[in-house]
Image (cartoon, rainbow, N blue to C red):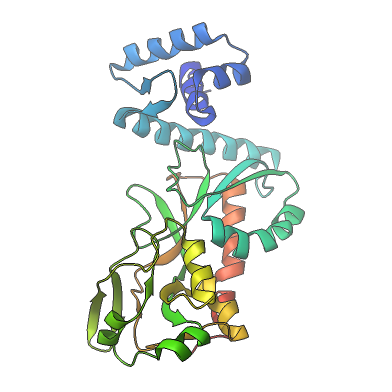
Length: 301
């Protein structure tokens, strides 16, 4: 059996605060605070910074939380093995994913997972903000990045191919660039923080400097401007493949693409025996995107 104060600490982190954890454990906020202070005194380390608005783990708290979650998962797995239920995914499962990707390439398939695992209580948060797994109380994050993050367990699901593209209307009005150098004479479109473009070509890495013709924090707005003839953009193939298939946009300078280091990852906190629900969801993602994701199957070579 786990120390009750350890279990209380995990619940505080998972629920995001003392009040919510107290409601779950049926303990008053005053007693919650007293027991948490007792645990910190016993360990000789500050675990949580508490303010009136939010909770934040200290480095010591992050380490303890990761270790305790692993212990709880192992205990849960041991009980399920004894009861014969180890193969059944159940319990709560919170997933985070980028907004556009989640809407286009996760939401249409989720019912398959729900039907296959009816005992899993699924929660899905879509956001383009970086989701800290501890702070957001997420069990699994889908990330599109070159670096999933330190100290995390990551499953690479696909390479995030990014191509230069523009609408036929834009190319008819402004011409089609034949070299990377030609891009300086064109309207370029990118969300804040997405330029310079770092590409890989026949001779190696290439950086495209410049500024977006329209300033925006929205990658979806860049996509719509590209579709309606606003300029040239570097877009992920998962985002633009449908438009390419319909002829709404065309790939330009096909010998240059975004770095293959950027990939699609399923990311979780390290656990020796992760809950069956997490394992089942990762297996589900593998069936969707491995070995070739659907957006690459029929559009480009």
